[in-house]
Length: 109
Image 1 (cartoon, rainbow, N blue to C red):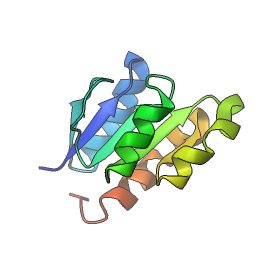
Image 2: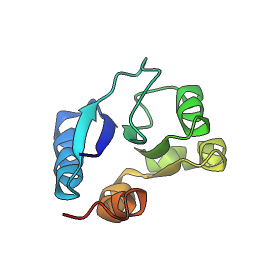
Image 3: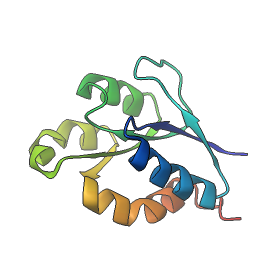
């Protein structure tokens, strides 16, 4: 079973992410902000870690799917340039199923 890392401290938002991941036939795995090794796809709250940590994961080949507050959007250019998908929170949760499908195109049960 494919694994998707999740670093979302807010339990309500975590449950939304977890449900979306399970609906793709994948297994959510909690990830600590200090983790060096993570699953190949990682869903995270951009405010839960430093931008440098997100960059490190993205540059190591991890598909980072991140959300954050809309007013910080101008700060996400470097993350996007490294291959991370970073969206404002409301848009992220609307598009989460599509983002996961793109990350695992053959994972639909």
